[in-house]
Length: 388
Ligand code: V47
Ligand code: SF4
Image (tube, rainbow, N blue to C red):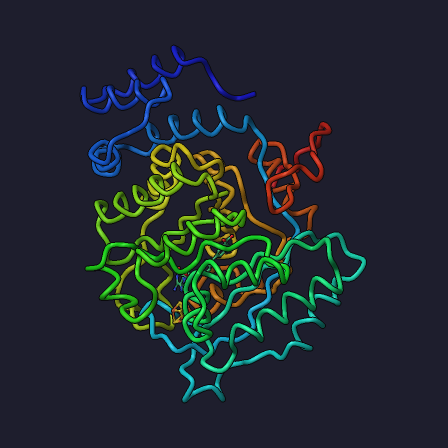
């Protein structure tokens, strides 16, 4: 175990010559007390990364020790045709330009799943654009056909943006729509589409899609029906620190009510091939701060995920020292969202050997999980850590 006692950490932190207000925050965190929004803001404004990192790592190790989770999954992106025009999106094509995009049929998608027959994947993650002609009944049949083929596969599918549109067109309440999708095989909901909740930012970057209230309502309804979900935040563009805290505060409040979120995933804005290419990407220091503050602020979220296809594997590995305990999956080159937006990972795929080696090199213990964070296999046998 790497974690130190409270008093050792306090000693370490005191040697950083902190202003009194930050010392107080450190003491609160070490005593397991919740931070106020004002304190969260101070962390962003005044916290240095060594100090934030020590605290975030302390919290991470209190929750999970050295255990570092990953799963074996495959992504299906049914289409990149989308009725919406989010300014940060490098991936979608409007319906009038659909000849430049792709649309998979039910058979195409089932064939993707069948490619993994006999391989030990545990999850299929389905997210795409909001196609005006692919409706609720199409996606319900997709779930049914995947489950009929491979019942044990966990299906994590459809962001609140996709769900909002399909329920509205089918004239279904969130509750009725989710109930039917659950019956068809939906096991959980991914965290996408949250972006930044504050209206003044949403209006500038994704004015036409689901608003914060409805994003939260869909997740709240899902949790009530026993469908867990994730939450994301798109950071590092035109938002302020206060917007980030407001976003995390709304998530923390919902989690207090439902306990249905599994993990929080900060998504770093990538600026290639989109209408926000003039906005510079955040620095490494800002990325570290974002992950560490998320770990400290979201005290009721069990897991903090660094999504390596977006962040790059080196950065994701480094974040294991700044609060992160989950790296998502092996993925097998099955997502295009981030490669099209300029991420380093142009063909994201890691074998189990590669992902466990990456975790071990950070002096952590690789743990394969399923989608509900139940342990599939611990890789805690003493390992020879490669030097490169
Ligand atoms: O909502 C789009 C983001 C999200 C860009 O729940 C961008 O386990 C950065 O939600 N730069 C969709 N980000 C993907 C998503 C997700 C991914 C992995 C795991 C999970 C999970 C969820 O992708 C969108 C948006 O926030 N995105 N364009 C961009 N240029
Ligand atoms: Fe469509 Fe999603 Fe891209 Fe927005 S981020 S344009 S909703 S695919």
